[in-house]
Image (cartoon, rainbow, N blue to C red; front, side):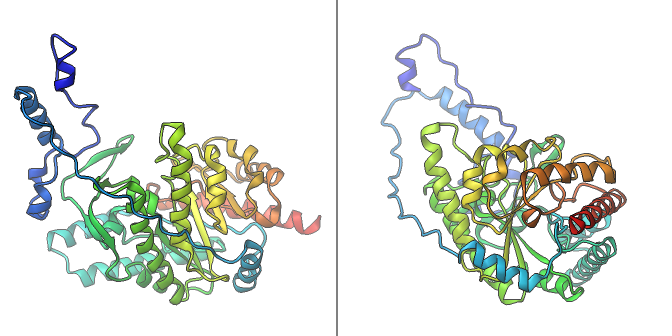
Length: 427
C-alpha cells in the first residue's frame, strides 16, 4: 500500500476479491481452540482489517514474512505393474464383463440428517445413531444386490461431507459449527481448517466397510477421499509449501488404505475430483504441480497389494485436459463424469491402459435415464475402449438424489449392461 501511494493521488483499499467463499464471522465459532481462533479471519474480520489498513499511516517497516525452508518431496511409491495386478484382481474378484458399480454415496435421507444433528446437539445417544447408520448400510447393500450391481458400496450414510468427515478424524484439522460457504449452485459446505501437521490417530472408515462386506458375498468398495481433494476443499495453512501439506495428508490416507486392506476389503476407491481444480493458472507452474500431486496420490495408494483393486474418481472438471496426469495416478480403475457432457471425454481416453468407467447416468438431474439411452452411451464407450477395460457407473455419487430416482436409474443401467453382455458373448 505504501508503494501504491507513491504512484497515485488517491488510494482505495479493499479486499482482493469477493468474500463469498469465506465464512461470515469467526466469533460465531465458540468450539474452536482460542489460540487457533486468534489466527483466523473470516469475512467480518477481513473487513475490519481492511478498515484498519485504510486508517493506518503506513509508517514503519513492513512486517517480515517468516522464511520456511522447502521440505524434500516424499517418494510417490510404486505398486506392481498393472498387468500383474489385473491378473491377481481378476482371480480374486471374478467380475463379469462390463462390471456395474456406483461412485460411492447413496441418498442422504432426512432421517439420517436429523439424527446426525441430534447427535451434535446431544439429544441422541451415539450408539443409537450408529445403529441407524448400520441399518442404512444394510438397506443400501440389499438394494444393490436386488438391482444386480457387481461391485457394491456401503452408501456413506455416516458422512456429512466427503472432506469434512475426514477432517473430523485427522489431527491437524479443525471444523466449524457455522462456517458455511457456497459450494456450487445453492449448495453449501463447511470447509475444514487445516492448521497443523496432519496425522491419523486411528482408522475411521474400516468399521463401516467391514460391516457392509459382512452382509454380502459381492465385493464392496472401501471409500476414501484423496489427499489433493482434502487439501483443495479446506482452508489451508500457508506456512508450509502446499506440496508438503498434501504429502502429509497422503501419509494419513495411506495408513487408512493399509487398514482397509488388512480388514479384507478387496476394492478401495481414493477419489480425486479436485485434481484438475487445483491446477495452477500459470502454465509455468502446472507441470510441477501435476508431478507432485500425482506422486502424492501414488504415495497414498502405494501400500496396496496386487490383488487389491484401487479405484479413483474425477468429476466437476474438464478431466480431458489432464489425462496424462490421470493416467499417471496408476489406479486400476478410473471413473469419470461423462454423461453430463455428452461423452466428450471419450475422444481422448484411448491412452489410458487400465479400467475406465465413463459415466452413463447424469446424477445432477432428477431425470431418470431410459435403458435405451444408457445402452447408446455404452455403445459409444465401446468404440473408444475394449470391453475388457470398460466399467459401467453413474457420473458421480448419488447423495443428492432420492431412492426412487436412484433405483429406477440403476435398474435401467443394469438392464442395458445385461443386453450388451449377451451381445458380446455371441460375437
